[in-house]
Length: 309
Figure 1 (tube, rainbow, N blue to C red):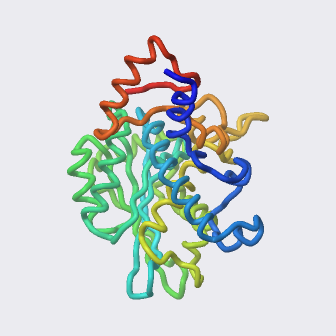
Figure 2: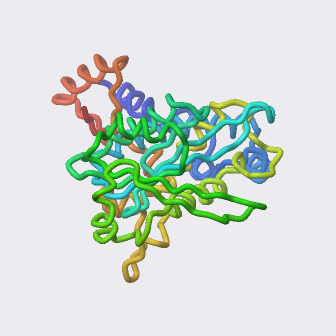
């Protein structure tokens, strides 16, 4: 195989493929398109295209790396935002593993049974279900049906319902919905929770709102389309899990990332390493191409490419 053809195969799967700027400039592009375009003196359309490309790659990277999680305590919540006009509210469903502070899954869409089911199915496919998790959410009506369907009676599901008056919490009701008899023992064995709460996922909600200008409570820069919110969420989730050290995961002088704490990596990654990852993500469309490349790699190894089924 000619070297030129090997270089083409190598670059085709690279996030930097056909990039007409320095890689460092691509890595520095954030979530506020107008500000980045003005500071970096790049066209707004270029920044928009880069963010779409980075979001697609981060979604693949998240799905590839976030597997085999041992989750003991889990919390889930939703973030309300606006897409298009004020008549079109949309919700960002998020979940967090308390022990590692990992953000394993997210779903963007309407506040419906289907999206709630997609969130917990995505979670169950990435979890090691040998340990029954303790799940805490708010009082959204579809959580009980979905969690009972996905995890069954083996899990311990609780709800924390807050009553607000004049923007202040005046009452907190805690109740066990599934597995109430195991609640006291689970709280005694917990390393993070003394009582039922949703404070960890609410803190994650604040981090997400601060990380994306689309999710500001009083902002005029909301996303115009759902896809414009999907890609930044995947980019933000990848940065939160694999790149950004979490201050709650400090062990001596070492401050770990959630992925490091969960055992998914052995160190903090950089966006350059994420975007330049050479792992091959197999889909039904490129399966034949991957099989051909696996057979040809015996005689013509492609330097830097790791094939994974």
